[in-house]
Length: 131
Image (tube, rainbow, N blue to C red):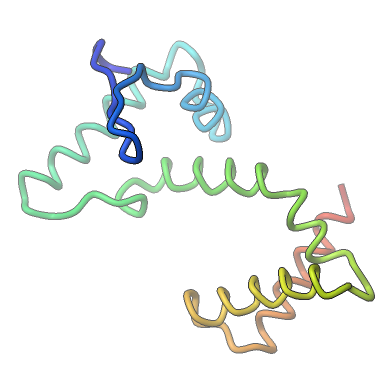
């Protein structure tokens, strides 16, 4: 939070203060200290402003450290879902639907073929079982 501006909720239109706890939880995934958070946030804003001035769209991929932090945060947040999807040997219909949804997303959005999608889920299962 570089200034005292509030953010607008795109769903409700309401304004509220930025979620400092969320920001810190993302930043901590890439070891941004509390003392370094302002510098990191300024860096992200600078990159976004440069993109804007050049007529480009700033996206998560525009800032590799931010992308890494968000990916780690989301992976951590969805770990329980990943465990459910990847750990059931004989899934019921509900679990099978979730597994199929993950496989379809890997195929449709990330270019996997169905065999590779199944292998990726198997690999994630192996990683999670080592914890």
